Length: 306
Figure 1 (cartoon, rainbow, N blue to C red):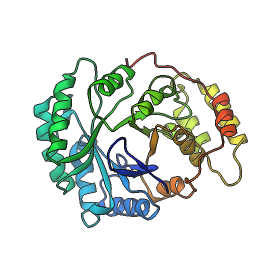
Figure 2 (figure 1 turned 120 degrees about the vertical axis):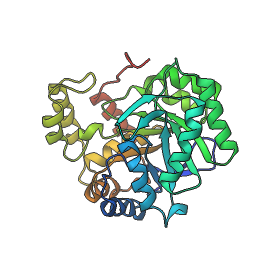
Figure 3 (figure 1 turned 45 degrees about the vertical axis):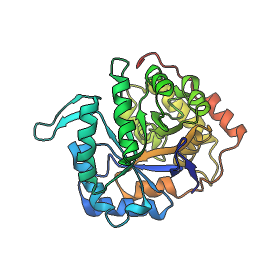
């Protein structure tokens, strides 16, 4: 598996990332999934303090305690939560970030975080205060690099303009091509890496796409109707060759853009990790196939989340 530089930092991340939100609370099973991912060449794990109100970070902290040096670890901040009451509110303040990072370090059983992201963001946030918090943590060596997780083009532009972020995690897939119009080129031009989340579109671009669309696609997906989802699925399946799965094609599609450093997939079983790692990702899809896939799908636009 190839490794790509994260923005202007010295961090190298695998071109596939294990998104850990769905690992569950069984430590034994989580260890098996993480170990399988590492053995497959993945070195990057993504979590957030809000996932299971801190439990996800604790599970990962226990799972990686003897292999921390092998892993690039990402977590996120900004959702001020109360574990006892299962409540949270948006809080990108400097005060909260400086406290929350200590809690994440404790739960993750580590003394540093490789990549720390703001878990959302709006134009109404105290953006300069948020940036100042990340810059202090970076200067102190508590974090190695920072970025934001956002699908809001206007927010992304503000951070590009005013901060030294090294990466942006954003939703991007064959069925959600919105970043192609407004953010991918901008980030690439500014040497900021994209971490593509949701590349399998909730499983609608997976090996079980037909079943998933029947179960989850009845109300459509973004600007696709249920009927359109079924039609697109058939057209994509028709151009698959015998050596490429639907999972691999979906992951390779988002990796084609030079801004994308890694595709972040979620998994709740070893089998799901295997489905996403059993193919060769060292070579990208051809320009011809890339164009065919773009002709089959929509060049969506952001009309909300601005």
